[in-house]
Length: 246
Image (cartoon, rainbow, N blue to C red):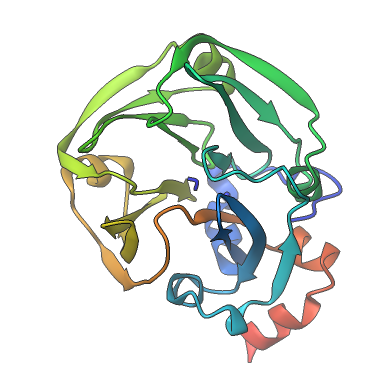
């Protein structure tokens, strides 16, 4: 899931440059094989990513063995990449991979951070590109509320503000955000049936959907949206930008 390239240096994404960043986003999706994500695909549009048509992918990055377990949550704040780590009692650590996606897919951990408390393995960890981190409170029936943390340090310390969802979001739904927009997969019996887009965090809380994309796949698939210019250049995907400008 989380439930999202190859940057040699961090790409700073501020509110002032979000609109520009939206012009060249890369939509990432990791596909499930057994109990692991094995390949992370990059797409030039949300529609292509949602369709699960891997032939439309512009890049494919293989995960190293024993790195991308589906029980862990992978997420990005638009600059750095993270993964939760857990014991039999729950999620108790977060790995930070820095700004280079290669570190995440090869398991090259830059730093390990202990959480102030152990969270349920059903809780969903994610982030946006404005500096906020999120943890959904989930039960066997789905996500009932979300806690927003204003920094990574506050996430680690458990210092945040809780909000109730208007209704319970489905068990297995994945969440991510970028550039002020928020996304959630619609799941049913372990399968993805669509991806809902929200114009703001408040819209997500109020279940005010802007757009729904038709989607298929496993509820355990991983989703990320990342800034494209540096990622594309470093992946040798300059042709992707050219195709978009035609």
